[in-house]
Length: 113
Image (cartoon, rainbow, N blue to C red; front, side, top):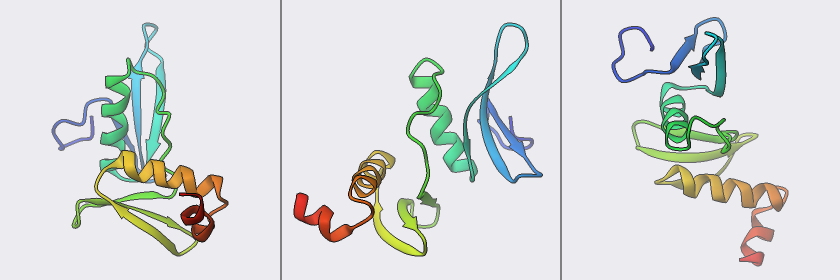
């Protein structure tokens, strides 16, 4: 739990690295890391996904996807390029995966659709 913030069970804030980890403790009191996010919002999304899927490791990966709290939406950024705004994480992850398959060529992605 992040100190002073409610509803952050299974989330650890590593201040030196400035990241948040989703972790569970196994029977022998060892910590098992299920995912790492740069913001608390990313870690909360990962934690909820892991909990809904029987505490499996987070399979989605948040690379290039960022949550903007003010706009309440997800953005895809890579190398100072903006690739879209999405209202759900699932839509953003799908678009990011398609862009990766097309080697980040947006014109090719539009042609394939």
